[in-house]
Amino acid sequence: MIDNKFWNASVNRIYYSCYYAVSALLLKKSIETSSHKGIRQMFGLHFVQEGLVSKEDGRFFSDLYDRRQTGDYDDFVSYNDETVMKLFNQSEGFISRIIELIK
Image (cartoon, rainbow, N blue to C red; front, side):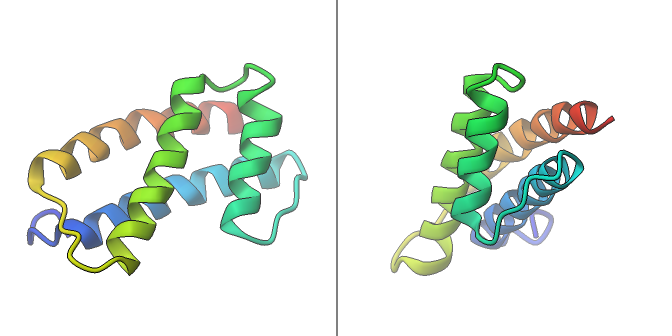
């Protein structure tokens, strides 16, 4: 998506990459959820509030969710390359840290 400059679709894919990493982490700890909201809440409760994940990473994941929602469902929202590349770079670190927790 990034290579083809589909910026809103890129935000969507970046979010889902992080979402699936967090989902795997929750699954590993036998924490069940049934919605995006539930995943955000359980991630915050069991990992951010417990200090296993930084507050910055917690905010990043929530912000990414909001950006995905906005890009997918709101009218006249168009992300640009600068925003997307910043999110992409942040997501790489975020996912790496989540993988370490899964191990």
